[in-house]
Every structure is written in structure tokens, then in C-alpha cells.
Image (cartoon, rainbow, N blue to C red; front, side, top):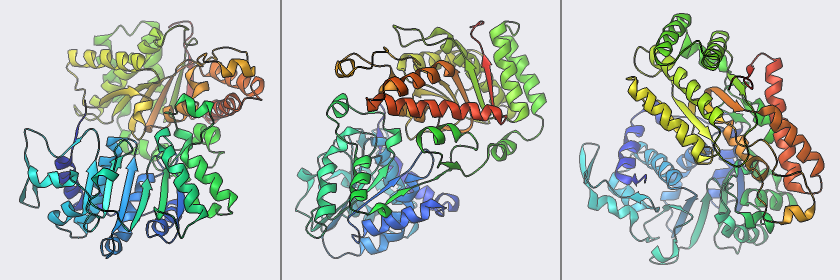
Length: 536
């Protein structure tokens, strides 16, 4: 079980505050308006606002830069005003806490003052590691007992900020009731547990002067909502981001809903598929792939590939058709500066969540890219690699055997990660090797009766946002393994045959446009599609 330690977060925050590149970021493009909205709501000038941030557009930066600009004003309030930052995971809570504290250190606040100002709560958050009871901050030893203050009760006369997951109950920790509560709700689109904020949003917009809490700013992206409980779909309970957008529109307050339109993670033009499929073509990339590619792979690439092939040949038989096709395709993509590869396989087999051919291709691809990464920098990894899939047995078994093989051959595995698509939300890597799930519909009966039954649907047509997350974690290269042709065909069928059932129609439209975006990149020479039906 992963545990988060506030001692580590404090040390990281202090180190960040000393690093100009870490702390002195500037807002860009659509972030500027989003931060302006954030500050107005956080100060209580506006009651309700929302910022939608597609993958890599900087929702976290909106929080980071927005809070930095209001820190002095907020901390100088005389009244009992409490800011509650609520997120769905312990990871997000600790990350937000770390950024916030880095800003405090940067502005010159003493660590003992910080311990009085903030509280942090999470099911996997502890004050410090058992084996390391103290932490050094600015050449001062901070005992673990002092760090424990961060998880004690909340006295709103002193405490200004609380960071917590939505599973924590804040009220019992309050010494007394604050005069005002102001909510900052992060990744609001991901989880149905945020339904508690629906009536709060409605109350704020109807009675802004009388509402308690005072204000709420919401950060998220409904197009990455992949943890939606079945009852939310059955009873049509809206996700918080969608609900706030509709409420603001009904009251002619659309300007209080901001869309971040530039991704700093995805290299252009690989944002095209999800931009077409999920964001009506509004999402664009800040930096083109070739800019990053030239920085990483400048000079000597053919020699690196020759050495990588030699190393690969000592591990596997390069004359085998699958191995040969995979390595040659990767070589072709790297030599020609192509950021996307699709290995087309047979459709995902029914009755299981494991596909041997996809696992094998993921293994081969990850192995060869790992060798290239190591040789490119003379023994140290030049880039990170993550293996992902919608199903845990496919993702973890592939990753496990790849890691085992790398260890056997004496290659470091520090660059390698593997995870399900669902668990990698908020994460990213240089290279993503992702295996598609079942591309077909569970059935072709789109009657109301079939939808109302408990018959399970395949993942992409139950939660089409999975595909968005799956194709949006890379900073450099992406390799897709699966049957995109079958997925497009199924999406087209769902869109047309399921026109009276919104779940199928919306999923079908988004998925079909996403695959069309990949095909568009093929016409522009930015993707290689290799059909491996006959050799895998």
C-alpha cells in the first residue's frame, strides 16, 4: 500500500521554493482568464465558478498560481475564514499541499507558522516515516511531533487552509464554526462522491448573499470521468462539472465557466484524436512533437538503433516475423520523426480481460524501447516508458514479465512503469505503450429493455472517457496496440442504432471521431499503422 508522508512533502516543498524553475512559473493563454476567475471566487467576490482542463492543460497550475497571488491577502484576514481543498485521491491532496507550501516558503513564511495555518487529512497520509522521525528544513531539525500538528483538529481562528480527500469528515475536526467556508474542489469530474456539492452549487447561485459556505471554485474535466457508479447513470445523477455548467448557463453566467484550450503535455499533432473526439476540436498543443524530439534524439540516432538491434538480437530472435516487424516499425518512426504508432491486431477475444497477442506486442515494444532509452544516454534512461491497459491483468502481467526480462538482462528498470488506464489519471510519461480493451459492443440490441437490464457493456461503450485518458498520457511518443478499425465500426453502429439511448449515441460519436483523428494523422504522415493480424 502506498503511503504519503507529510515530512517528505515539506522537504520537497522547501527544495522547490529554492529552485527558480520550480517556483517561478507564469500563466499562459487561457490559464490567465482561468486564474482571474479562480481568484475572484477564492476571495468571495463571486460565489461559483468552474475551470475545465483537458489533459495536460494545467488545472494544477491554475490552483498553484491562483493561490500564490492571493496568499498574503487570505492569510491577513481577521475573521474565521476557512478554505477547504477537496480532491478524490490522497495523491492529489499531497501534491496540492506540497505546491501550496512551496509558495509559502518562497514568500518567506516560517515552517512553524505553516504548521499552524494548514491541516491535511487522507486515509493514506501520515505525518512522517517510522524510520525517519525528523526532517531538516532550512538547516533546522523539525521533529515528527511538530509535523503531527498538520493532522490535528481545526481551530478556524488560526487555521486557514485544509487539504482533504472527499472521504474525510471535516466537521468533527472543527473546534468551532468558521464565519465563512470557501471550497476549492479539484478533479471534480472524476468521482460520484462529489454529489454532496450539487445542492451547495444550487444554493450559491440562487442565494449568493445568504449561502453558507460562501463560495466554490471547481476544477476538473467531465471528459475524463471514468469512475462513475452505475446508479449515477441509472438515475441520471449529474456529475458536478456538468451540473455547474448547466446552472451557470441557465442564469446567463457562462463567463464563469472557463475552458483551458492548450495542452502542455501532449506534443502536436498527437492531441488531434482526443481534440476531435472529446473537445469539439478546441484543444491544441503548445509544442510540436519535433521540437521535443530534436532535443532528445539529436544526432547519432542510426548508430543507436544499430546497437539497440544488436542488443535486442541477444535477447530474442530478430528473424521471427513479429519481432522483426515491431523493431522495424519503431526504427521507421524514430528515423522519420513520427510520434504515433498503431499495431493493428485481431479484435479482443470474448470471455476474458487478457489478450495474449496484445500482451506479447506490449512486451516486445516495451523491451525494444527500453533498450533504445538506455543506449541513447550511455547507460542512463533517456526517457521513461509506461505500459497501460484498461484491464489490470493485461497491464500488470505485461509489465511484470517485461520488468523481469529487463532485470535478467542487466537493464535498469527505473524508467519503467505499468498501470491501468483508470489509475494513471493525473499521471504522464515520455512514452506510453497502451493496449486497447474490447473494441466490440456486448450486443446489438439497443432496445430500452436491453439498456435497463443489468447486462454488462464493454468498457468503451460503458465509459467512453476511458479512451480519452488512454490516449492522453504521453509527452513524446505513443504506441497503440489493438483493433482501431473494429472500434470505429462498433462506434458507428452504436451512434446510429443507439440514437434513442444517449449513453450509446454519445459514446459512439466520441469514439468514432477519435479514431477518425488517428486516421487524419495518417494522411499527414504523423502516424504509422501496421497490420499484424496474420503474424500475432
